[in-house]
Image (cartoon, rainbow, N blue to C red; front, side, top):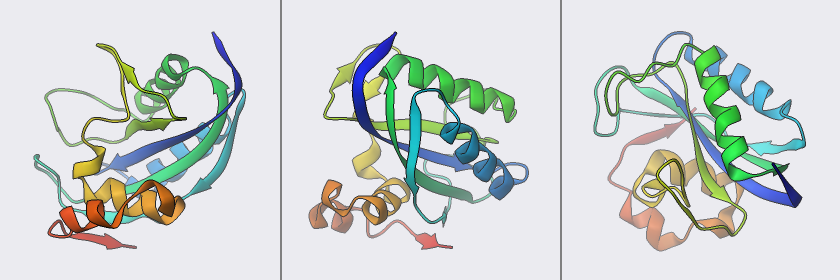
Length: 156
């Protein structure tokens, strides 16, 4: 099922297992090759300790897309890219080879068992807000950035 108009989408990527930067670069390339989808931009990489989890530090980024895919089809495409990168889901917040989260889908508000947009915890996470504010400063408020300033995140 296709959306009619191009929709602005922001997605967060992260990884902390394997060849992390290579996995993220490959995922960004794969996202840019999705049908009816244009990769508009990507943030810098950011390094942070696992958030409510364990394992090595994460490398994160945010991408801006324009797509005609609907949110569910886009989520499925992201999950296929994760699987190709060896993603396993043994438990919540487990270390991972690749994680792609749909953060924002246009001005949409989607609440279903499979998908919640805007991402329900994105405003609590510096590793999402900092790269998102780099790409789209108008989407992140100064108040939101102040609320996460205690979380250590380093731009790489």
